[in-house]
Image (cartoon, rainbow, N blue to C red):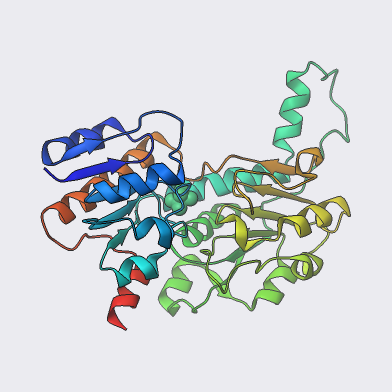
Length: 326
Ligand code: DGY
């Protein structure tokens, strides 16, 4: 039977779905594979199921002797050299369409949490330091009626924008391509050049994928354009933002606060981050609900079964398709 290797911990139900169809090799521990482990897996397997922390570069891909598919357990796939895989005829898949609502929920938790100082206030209360109501204790910014700026308006950005109507917010968005009018109407969102969005928004939230064009798209210059009362939220991919510039902007009070779920050098935090009270830090949990992680795993399993049956997997990543149609 073809070997399918799942590099990291994976939901049981999806493993059970795969087991009858292959020689399944799993790693149900919290220890990630080393580069050497990945090379070995790739050299032996017909399919490898990867995490975003598995860096699948050219050197690893070249070890594949009968590798058909790299199935990423996530919507993002910047950990894989897709162009090289495509050149070698190895499919690359991801998990679109199942995690955007969950990630949008977390984004809103971060918007509200940053604006209303939820994390420091909770810590203060837990430490038994609450001695009575105070007029100026943990004052934050209002969310209701403010302006939300969404950078990157794909599945996740759109789901974030849609939720803003409950807060009676004005929504501005910036995207590589302007959305069709019907979609803009549905989201009640106004297409806005990036600079203007940064100047006008009270909350700026980033949902752009990491590409050569988006790397460090938000840095010192962009933080200077934001209002000093504005909050910055980031749940996309760390390298889209210059974290050092963000720390500087927060330290200097150039913006009011920020909340991050992803980091430029993930999992490492940039210097100075942990000392900032006005910065909420989360460990990349955008899609981390029981239901969504199960749906993502189920979709991974479907892609693997497609490939094992000799069919083109249903969730080929868009850049793979572009490479092979060139
Ligand atoms: C995603 O699905 O892209 C999440 O960020 C986890 O990789």
